[in-house]
Amino acid sequence: MDKDYQELKEWLEQTKDAPLEAMAGFFEARIDSYEEHMARWQAHYEWMADLLPESVESLLDIGCGTGLELDRILNRFPDLKVVGVDLSQGMLDKLRAKHNDKNLSLVCEDYFKYDMGKERFDAVISFETLHHFTFEKKAELFKKVFDCLKPGGVYLECDYIATSQAIEDLAFSECRRRRLRDGIRDDIFVHFDTPLTLEHELEAIKSAGFSAVELVGFLPGDDHTAMIRAVK
Ligand SMILES: C[S@@+](CC[C@H](N)C(=O)[O-])C[C@H]1O[C@@H](n2cnc3c(N)ncnc32)[C@H](O)[C@@H]1O
Image (cartoon, rainbow, N blue to C red; front, side, top):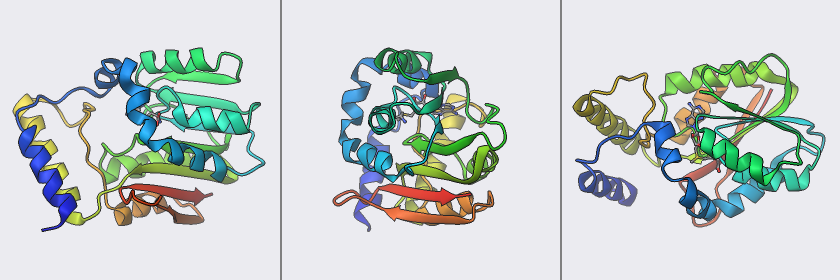
């Protein structure tokens, strides 16, 4: 049996009785230790900042949290006009405190509901926020991302990818089991990882109409975190 699958099965067994946590509450409860926990992606944050085109002036960050990716991006583009959307006000407050002198507009809202507008941004980014949603939900979101980008605009996504179909299936079926057990409806966001395979993730992005969608790659030693680029 595949090692990743085996590890996931063991972890699900160990945590099988743990109650599901609501998405915003999950992050609010961990604000103090959050940046330390995410430090493992330092090289990915740098990489995302490097991948943005030199000409970028406006950017939307969906699920920005405390903005670890923005720390690197604002270092490279200090005058960038940024809109950050996140469910957790506590995370946004922390982001604001770090970058009070920057051109940041922070919105505490569900990005599926947030009105992204039309042809408003040069770039949209998402970092480790989308691995909790179904293909259909993501396809709906990517259409909004596409619409809000200017022609030639870029979408960069760095996220957790299921390394096999069996992993994708197992995670979704366990999430369903826990939702039923805890009486949580499908439209309530919970913090439980349900990554899509790379093939499905790319397919969901392509369905929005981008002219090019590609896997930029993985960093050495991490084949679970994919960097994806799409161009309008
Ligand atoms: C793992 S954190 C990543 C934050 C940031 N991108 C980073 O890498 O430091 C995921 C973030 O996505 C946010 N999030 C999850 N689902 C969301 C939704 N539907 N709308 C807005 N924010 C959401 C969470 O509140 C959390 O702050």
